[in-house]
Image 1 (tube, rainbow, N blue to C red):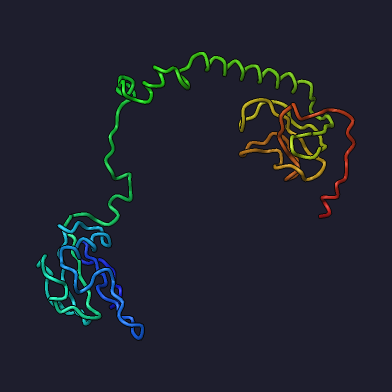
Image 2: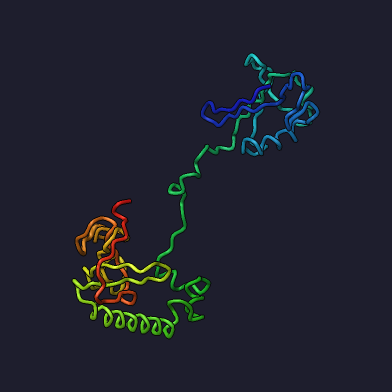
Length: 248
């Protein structure tokens, strides 16, 4: 018997195989056999079609798509019906469910609560964090983090002030070989907090053309520009080196 699947009518209807002939290898039986009683068979079909057994209406059709009979005797054996190779069981779902009705979660009604009402609850995560003084509700920790951020920003500002635009420099970033170039930008940026140094490398060893996220900070060729922290930039007499990358 062949596997068939599909939908028909206003309610969901499923077609599933009952038997499968194996030809020379002999008959191979699907999970349903002629010795199954109808109710256990419905429970097996429930795993296949997703409809509760109590909401199923079963019909038996022949190989020529001719209706044989309804399968409505729960204690009857499937073999007591005219079941043969090529027959199919037609499952009609009366549960009222529709395929895909829960796939679009935007259509599922959700519980909502206002911020004011949530603040009043004593069994919420927010209430627990407040009582335990954790995360952003730990004033001492927040104050310490803000102080560290301010100190780090001041240190970067001091370092950046000693790096004039137009100076030759060498960049020594951790885990990377030294790279030489010209300082093209010094200051704050929109893409990340803190002070940054825009460098135009002598060779295409960078990541951009002097612009990031659509905002231009300086002009250079593509792959020649980069932004690095002041701490990895050394200003001095660094003549241009030829790495031969332009010839590659």
